[in-house]
Each structure stands twice: as structure tokens, then as C-alpha cells.
Amino acid sequence: MFAAVLTLAVYATIALAAPVTAQTTPPGAGIPLSLATERAGAIRDLRYELSLSVPRDQKTALTGTMTARFRLVDGSRRVVFDFAPGQKNVTAVRVNGEPVTATFVTDHFIVPARTVRNADMEVGIDFIAGDASLNRNPDFLYALFVPARAHFAIPVFDQPDLKARWTLNLMYPNDWVAVSNGKATRAGSYCADGPPPAPGSTVPAAGFCASTESFAETEPLSTYLFSFVVGDFKMETAERNGRTFRMFHRETDAAKVARNKDALFDLHARALAFMEDYTGVPYAFGKFDFVAIPAFQFGGMEHAGKVLYSASSLLLDESATQNQFLGRASVISHETAHMWFGDLVTMRWFDDVWMKEVFANFMAAKIVNPSFPEVNHDLRFLYAHYPAAYDVDRTAGTNAIRQPLDNLNEAGSLYGAIIYQ
Image: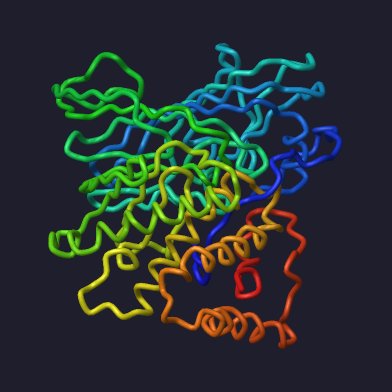
């Protein structure tokens, strides 16, 4: 996300190095570092396949199935999933196809694992999704899982160093659209009479009109970088430098969209080209979509392959000032830089969130400055960063850039001017 607005990403995909614990202590609330260390030492080759049914009625729960496939090493005897809604929202758990009884504790459930080393595991979980991180509105929703809020909606290992390849299957009202990190690979629709079928069902139940869509497996992503958007959105498409860009929006002023869209595609293409040239590393996530969300909490959020933005920061009025144009270019460049600093190279733990935020701000300035030659960029950089940082740094409440973090439920306390500026 952009500067004064929250954002999160990560560095070093190597697992936290620590011996596997005796696994006799129940995990505490949130995502304790001790639990994250245990799992990072035991889980390899992680893949998630998530199937969700998204109802039109905002008051009706989403239902779904999560299938987690991984290799369990070091003779681990338990697998702890994070899922804040708890036992009442889990209808079945299967390990390698066999029903099992899970043990539920605060924010987690524990499934028995095979005691053999290097065991291939497939854990299937039928569940009712929690709403806390799904941002549901009458005619759209968007999943926002940063910093560790995926487990408020779906059962996962909600820690940044357990990156997974994600496959998503969605069922949703057939006059809506859907977008996620991966490229859409298969779509269908039907109408019949009756309640909606379960996700993945091949037999439509009566009385339900729906679209079904599957999204291709992603590159390895942390849980906080996985997302999907479903709802009543319009789509704009453009080609830049041989790449297709798509913008999803809900703006009803066609003139405003027409006035802004070419600049938005140009800014993203320019930022991608700069980052590829500067780093020597090609963009890693295939497609590039972005979504303009009304009243979005942040300036932007760097979900790989599908960036979310505040609509007001992208679709500017005719009377927009130079500062607004510069701000828009900066937030786009910041989020694009995160595709490398944060999404491709990711922190092990959120105590290092400052690294990707500082790099994204630094790179954004490099990308944006040449397009605004009339601006004194050294002076602007000083004004944008130094006062905010030193206003905190000179007080008794100052803090180190890198702070201890024993639990991800406290990650929000790390954010502030020192982290970003």
C-alpha cells in the first residue's frame, strides 16, 4: 500500500529457522511466532485450492471448501490451521480423503497428521466463511487479508513465510464479474430453480442463476497477498508494450473514465517497464489487473496480479491539481514496485515490513520524477518524508525501525511514519 496508508509485503522466502517444537502446547490466539516457526519448519510445497459460493444477499454467508496440499517433514504429529470463526463454521475435515475429528482452540483448529517423515498431506475443509475481512457491500465484495486477516475468512496457515500456489474456483451471481490473482481459465453459467448448489457441484439446483469461474494457479504468494473481488464492476482494457492491462471500476461518469483511463494504463506500463529494466528481473505474475474500489481503506494494496486502489486516487476530476497528478503517479509506482519488493521477495515476518515499504517509496520516486521535470523533486522528497519521520523520532515515543513482534495480531501497531518515511 502507499506511504501514509497501510500496506504489507515481505522479504526472504526461506522458512524461519528453528527446531520443531514438542507440539504439546496449544497455540495461542492470533498467529504466535512460536506457531509460525513450528509450521515453517514442517511444511513444504504448499498449495491451496479454494472453492467459494458467493451469494447476492449480503446477509447470506459464503460457503466453501479449502483443500491444502503439502509435504509434512520432521515427523510432525499435528497440523494447525488458522480460522478465527471457529468450530461452528467448520462442517467437515478430511485428511488424505478420510474424515477426521479436529480439535478447536481459539483462532485455530488442529488436525492429526501422519507420524511418518516426508508425508504427503491433503487436508480438505468444508466451511462457512467469516465476513470480517471480506468487505461485503450490497453489490460487490473484496477480500483484504493484510496483514494476517485471511484466517478471519478462510482456513489457512496465515503467516508470510509459508507461501503457497493458489487455485480459486468461484460461483457468484451471473450479472457480476470476478477477478483474482490468477488468470481466469474456465467460465460457465446456468439458471435453475432452488437453492444454490455446493461449490464444485456439477448439478445445478433449482432456482439459482450463477456464473462459475476458475482462476489459474498462481506463483507462490503469502496469504496476505491473495485476494479476489466479485461484484457489479465495469472493465476497461488496453495494450501497452505487448501486455494487456485491465481496469475494473464502478464509476458511472463515462466522461471521467474516458478522461483518466489512458493515463492510468500508461502509468502502470511505465512503472512495470522501469522496474524490469532497473532490476533485470521480469515481472513474475503474468497478468496485470487493477481495481478501483469506492471508499477503499488505503491508497492501494499490492495483491500480485491484481492491485486494489481507492477509486478517488485514480479517477481524478477535471480540476485536479499537479499534486493530485503527482500523487496518483506515486501510488501507482509504489504498488507496482511492490511486485518486486514485497510480492516476489517477501519478508519472513512482519517485523521487517519497513523494508519493502521503504524500497517501494524509494523506487516510486525514481519512476515518477522524470515525468514531472518542472518539480523540485529533492525538495518534495524532503517534505514528503523527513518531517513525518522526525516528528516521531524526536519524541519520547520514538521506536526502532525493526521492532520485536511476537504475534501477528499486533502487526498493526508497527505502522507509522518511521516505517514508511
